[in-house]
Image (cartoon, rainbow, N blue to C red; front, side, top):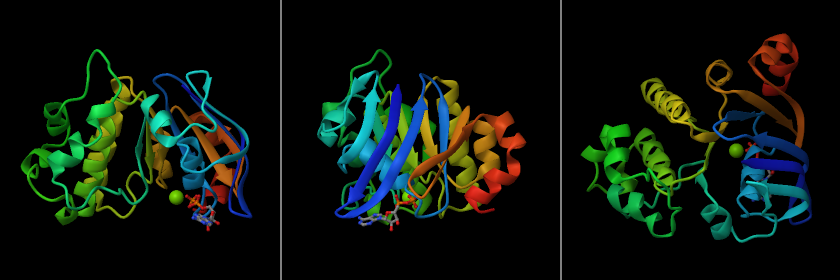
Length: 233
Ligand SMILES: Nc1ncnc2c1ncn2[C@@H]1O[C@H](COP(=O)(O)OP(=O)(O)O)[C@@H](O)[C@H]1O
Ligand SMILES: [Mg+2]
């Protein structure tokens, strides 16, 4: 599905990614962890083509995408829930959800407004409301719905539950678990190690722009001290 090999990237002269490698297989839920400022968001931005790669390679379904424009990468089936949500504040909830639908991937069981409203009943209640007036949790639900409406093969969530109230976090985690059970491939960034351990098939940790650890749940237990050192808890 997604293959990242020895990826390097920089903001101007300042190199931020030195050696990032990770893989998400079909139907897998994979976590990406690491302390603030270690390069998680930059990795996602580089995968999406929003930032150019200085070296290494990104492939989607075995097709190299390094150098392609962001719209082309998105249309290969990568749906992003960006850090900070970035919903269109003056558009209504419904308008946000249909905004990207024109260019979306075709598939046998496409996402529809009805399916999004079933997944997030609050979005149905708020359908006519401007997105900028929603709470943070509702904006995150909307950002997830908007990404799903592109019929993504891979869904990427950058800081899935950051800054959200516990009850909303629970709701987001339930939705992530449900999507995973339906076979959606997911790359997930979050700081809740316990939840990630329960939900994800495999994990990667990055430190100062390098993939420094990877493994499954059993490996997380085995390397507990090392992992805690990396994620800072
Ligand atoms: N637009 C930018 N210009 C310059 N440096 C940036 C920019 N965005 C992030 N950085 C730097 O890149 C590093 C990695 O940031 P980021 O990828 O956002 O980390 P994370 O998502 O893991 O918290 C940090 O040192 C950060 O200060
Ligand atoms: Mg980040």
